[in-house]
Length: 253
Image (cartoon, rainbow, N blue to C red):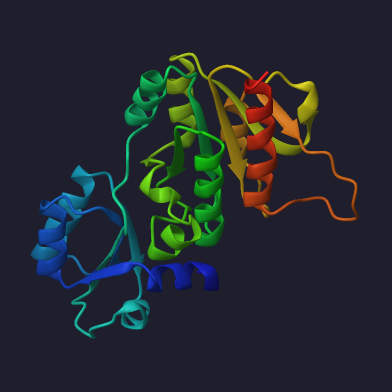
């Protein structure tokens, strides 16, 4: 586990103990992940796993030592839930928001963005660019922690963030609703030569791994940002800003 991931977990709100986690799940509390001690399979843990499955939540199995490191109370009882600082929205709400404004849908989709500062910065950019929402996957992605909220500079109060199980499948479903998708990749077509108007989803990957192969294959266009320097990649939030505002420029014509 990366140092950045550990840091983001520590800055999330943690719910510890079997009864507390069970009650949080039954109450519909927004949960990012549940961490369960390896090998523990008793009744209360099975109940937690069953409730988590109903909500399609991510469960991570970790060593007891990892839970001890995460715990703030020292009484985790083999299970800790990482709760989101903000409620998640839905893709349907984003499309409805676009319709109410009389605008073509404009969405940001983020693949492999695990740095909470990057996520917050992209949510801020999405808001200022007039996007109707941000979509993130459940796995291998930062959740809505307090760090994300701070980095968004208040944008999280206005721009909905939806979390989906499968980003590629979500793209397919949105294509059926008329959206086109463009992803950022240095081997693509220069962004100025692409038609980025109309209902569109902008897909951004991490600067380390980029957009995953399956997600990239679902995209209709691959956009490259012109590079004139000695290195070949931008920070993910900067790339999102550059491409996002090229979409804004073209939509304003």
